[in-house]
Length: 255
Image (cartoon, rainbow, N blue to C red; front, side, top):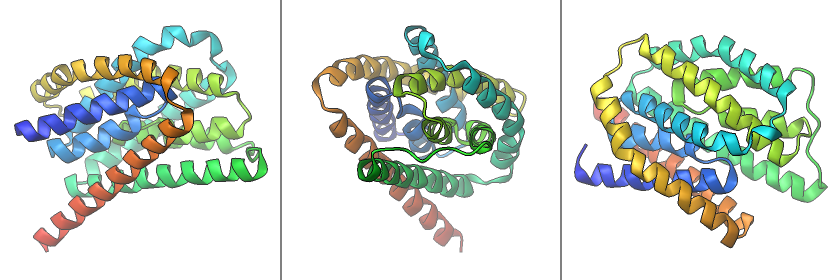
């Protein structure tokens, strides 16, 4: 990557880590897609897995008492079952296809967050989940963990619909991340991984990860939650549009 690309990557990790510490979500949604854009290789997914796993391990001890264990067990089982499909997907897609998939996933996450908040504002409640909501979401979470290093959005959506408190959702997701990212890293390690590139990039981005986390703890006390949510949505929409534009340009170049 050029120095400009490294600067973009550092900034993306910094902002995403700050949002993760302040709101409980952000790193998985932003870092993987951002690194796909700037690194231009599938190694971006492995770097995103390592960064997400590192931050999850650091943050989990402070939240472990709030874990909703019945939901976590279901999510872990589904993640294990869904992960092979995610590995097959990332193997099948070329880089342009992976960018399109990431663009679609990020954009749908943004739309879902907007819809969910508007619905909650209008009705004051969240729709009740059906019996298959959490198991189905856990399978999708496993697929997304292996293919895009993004297990959180669908799992968070299912947990919210099950009426679990916000602090329990955050803690349960954190525990899920430690398990799913560990399994995803092991699964990718059994495939062809450019470890030199992956470890070097992870190390270079580690300072931004730690700095962003510390900033997030400070920002959480000073900025209203609504402002943080708007920032997250803005970054997701920007990432989705950028990935769509980049992938479509690549399709036109090869046409």
